[in-house]
Length: 591
Image 1 (spheres, one colour):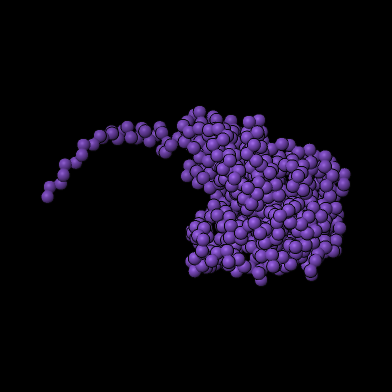
Image 2 (cartoon, helix red, strand yellow):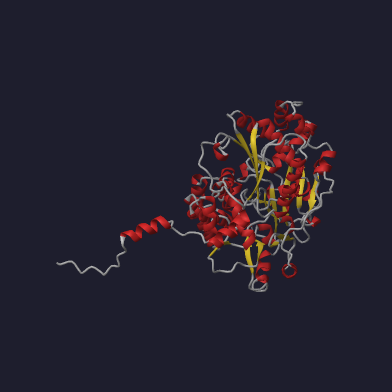
């Protein structure tokens, strides 16, 4: 058959094509106006690729969203591919990409739907706010914002509202109160005096006073760091103190601190240090509580670790929800640089952007490097090849917070605390159905019943103990019959749980364990980075199945096994804990 006639074509002379190729770059190019707007916010270049998230924050803060034209200009200014900029910006919850002709919301109100806030009435608060704040105010659900002792919590812009009501939110919006209030630096705070007591009450508000640099140094602060840097104290003495105290990682993994320091120090320089203050585990707020009141004790721990391990630079990764803590660190780091007690390593404060997965150590390093927060496959481990490919010491905030007191007071001081055969101190973030929620500095090995009765004033009126989560959303759920199990590393595993970051959420007879488990699974489904199929698909499918009146145990067992065995990181591996605990201890709820 003859070929059909070819469609008429418009032919462009080759000369024209060549002229166009020489005079115009391919792809979407930034407008001059967009380039000028971006340059005004980020300053003159060059800009390193690892600064991408920091620069996205500047655009987002200034315009209330990330507009496509600005992203094109930012990619050009940073000499990055547009695809790379968009894939990073679209990964984090606190960034929203909008077309250039769209209008960004004038204000965003986030209502926490973490378990403690859900128990305190967050769903009703969300419903009451729907459509009441005006078309220019966006109201959205938010994962745990780290203020569980003040539940329910709404965040207006960057201003948290404890024990939030619809009226309080409306008043804050009307008054334009959307920034975090500043904190005074005139506090006197001694954590040792808080030992075996309450570190902070829920009623202390959102901007408690803290210990500033002058007051901290007047009380002997930074002497230990200066002695190490000046060669007046031996690094091995510090390591021996950490070993003697049995200090372990207090962010969840529980790896011995002294051993970690030795491992990283054993690798060839240059070495780096990264500190995890992302604290996104639902129910956890201890790091924020200490940082809001005593930042320099933590910073001295950072300097001691940097000196002992020999790190070239330090990166502090702080969750974006902690705007007040960010202001404190920015201020006190500037003061420390102006009047250093000893030569300081470069210290960079990096801002998260709303991604629970960045609490995983390798995902945090990816985020610091300006990429999506996706966990890395191991080996190699980050102690050998971590941040920017260098040996890296990674620590949780609280682990470093106790370094000064352990070294100066001696390991015997730390080990003098403990119950039921355990030793040391633990900072428990307690929330839920207790009279006095808050951070409780208690002996390691204390039981849940002892913690509630001795430190929390007992159960709230009208509530009796039914169940509890010993380690946040990841740590599983235990019944009241196991409230006499010591709370510490390695004591809960026989019961299908772990202590993690010691985030204790207490349930009563008015709650159901299955609801707590579903809340946790929905959280994991929302926060999965999506990199591995078992976690991405498993958490979402499990959440759907857990909504059914009678659970499909066979399918949930299969999902749990696959998530636990095949997920890349701890998120997917720990997600089944809540399912298995409900099946084991609360089977009547899901028949």
